Amino acid sequence: MKILYLHQYFNTPSMPGGTRSYEMAKRLVASGHEVHMITSFREESETQDWFQTIEDGINVHWLPVFYSNKLSYTQRIKAFFAFAFASARKAASLPADIIFATSTPLTIAIPGVYASRRQKIPMVFEVRDLWPDLPIAIGALRNPLLKFAAKKLERFAYRNAQRIIALSPGMTAGVEATGYPAKLISTIPNSCDLDLFTPDKEKGKRFRQEHPELGAGPIVLYPGTLGKVNGVGYLAELAAKVYTLRPDCRFVIVGAGLEWANVKQLATKLGVLEKNFFMYEQVPKQKLAEVFCAASLVVSVVIDLPELEANSANKFFDGLASGTAVAINHGGWQADLIDKYRVGLCLSRDVDVAAQSLVNFLNDDEKVIHCGLNARGLAESQFSRDALAKNMENVLREAVDGRDFRGKK
Image 1 (tube, one colour):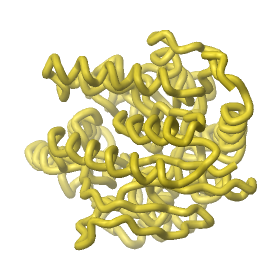
Image 2 (cartoon, rainbow, N blue to C red):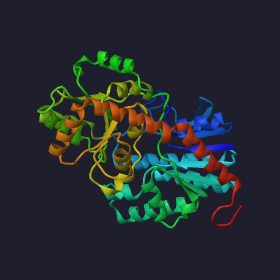
Image 3 (tube, helix red, strand yellow):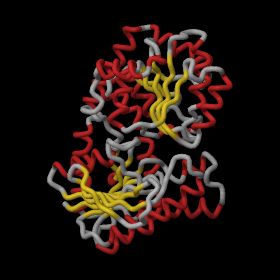
Image 4 (cartoon, one colour):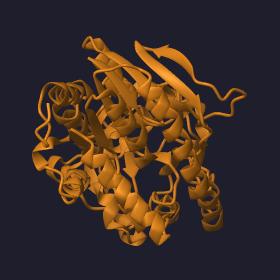
């Protein structure tokens, strides 16, 4: 197959951020398919024209559209639409057998549907977040007309997709709730890079040697975005409580985002910054793997909203792959995995309760090790990237070969 893969925020392992699209596309290439990735180049650039590179066999078409996690929601929306309209023309100009469009943002449906109709080829749509439910829930989308338009765009995307891939059971249920046929939805969660995140004590030692300020005690790692939905301030509050119980424990934040300054200010106010709470700028995925090897626990946190419990956080799966115990502060399907397979713990939103349960966990060295071993086992048995990429390939083949739910070939 010749596949047009549309993802506005595609990353390679040498770049900060999630690499799901890179990993899936690389495996599609290895299976003999021709993949053209249409994406944006987010750094400041003198040129505004498309340019092309080859990344591990993937033909990547880059359009300079500046983007940062520090942008306001209004600025982000402008970037979404700027890319959507430009990439629509680009996608329509590249002959292919199928369109694979992955959100977020939901505006990726615009070039996906446009190219699908112009070329008369099927589109498979991947749902990474339940937009627009999430931005509405967090108050980012308040205008009634914009809410209406966003809901219309969601239905437009689903209506024009021959198949849909959702990243969690909760997202699958959300798509079903719109009336889309359940039999045409496949749940393919974020996966584990079993090679990059291989447990390696020597890498962990190297990271600690580079950062003597962290000492020799347990490290609680948060690797990822510091946005409003993440609520990383919770970890600063937790660090303040933990210090009185386990002063050698270090909270390590590696990332970037709109809330960076606010979290740093809160940590300073609580007196934990550079004491047991350390913040480091985001690093490429290859370097980040070393940090995982030094951690005793990897945490994924979000603010208290039911809509966020369907998330499929990369950091959770990277933690599993690295053989590190994981923790979250919310319910949902990932909480079920933690309980069922004993790979970590679920933290209370009450920081006093959470601090005590966290310290109890870290004080039990045997439990920490056992949960790490279980985490790696779960990564290998259920979330292997190779296996899940094959599932994705099968969905794309079925979309190309089969009839869609409207009875059209």
